[in-house]
Image 1 (cartoon, one colour):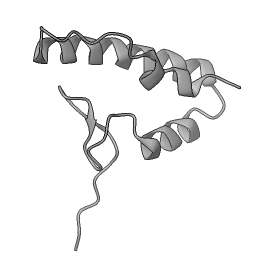
Image 2 (cartoon, rainbow, N blue to C red):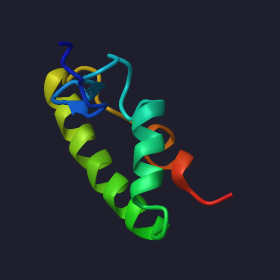
Image 3 (spheres, rainbow, N blue to C red):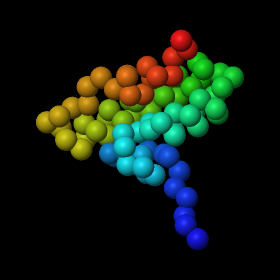
Image 4 (cartoon, helix red, strand yellow):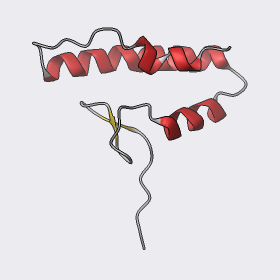
Length: 81
């Protein structure tokens, strides 16, 4: 039997635990949009909170390369069109 891995962030690198790409990956974005389909504002607050945590973690990993603008990665995709 194969073990299914969820598309969640692997901290402190903020890569997807399932597919290894930068989180939120496409699968995570779809899941989040489904979970928050009736409350886009709550989704954006949740993502903004995670963005701050990611910036701290990524800066701690490599202080010479501070995490700069992560808004495209974390919140821009979730804004209503």
